[in-house]
Image 1: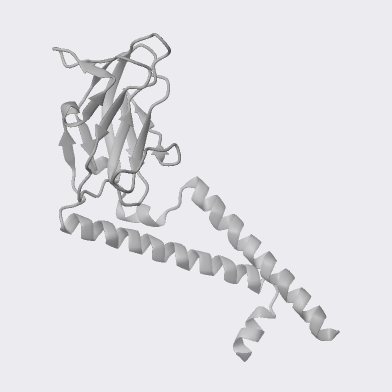
Image 2 (image 1 turned 90 degrees about the vertical axis):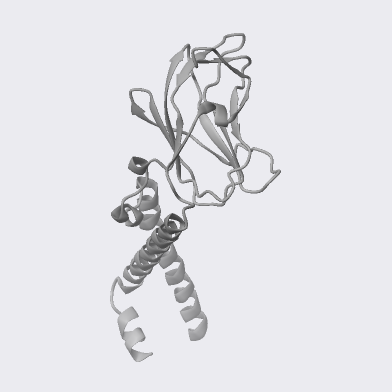
Length: 213
């Protein structure tokens, strides 16, 4: 107890402690995520899988004899109704568009029968040369709905699409990447410990004043 009092009596000890705790929590989370993925790989649930476009239910899309897809309305969809026991971290494919693709996104549900929602969707990272990668959040998945494009009203879009790959090896994180934050996560790791330290400092100052009274 005395050692703690001596520590916190030092200038800057409170924010330093907050940052050290945040770092410790981040490292524990990274280790937990790495362990979870390693276990899923060992069980065969987190594996690279290549699926043909026709393995997905096509809605508002018609596939031609040459394999191209043509939109039939303004909301074309490709649906995988049952993700099953798969652990899906990424979805990737290559696509070329004859027309303006506009918005592309991937919806997901976490429960069977759940409606698709704008709160549960991700947008692709474009790697160039028509390559797109969607990175899904770390959550249980029930169904997936890929919206490959959003045609303008009364305009059709024709797209040539490769097979769809789940968990492509080059899209999954290396070991070190489990412990490296994104820019947004790094911002949160800088901001929130400082706010927590400031809040604790204010509460401590108020409590000290009341004791003196």
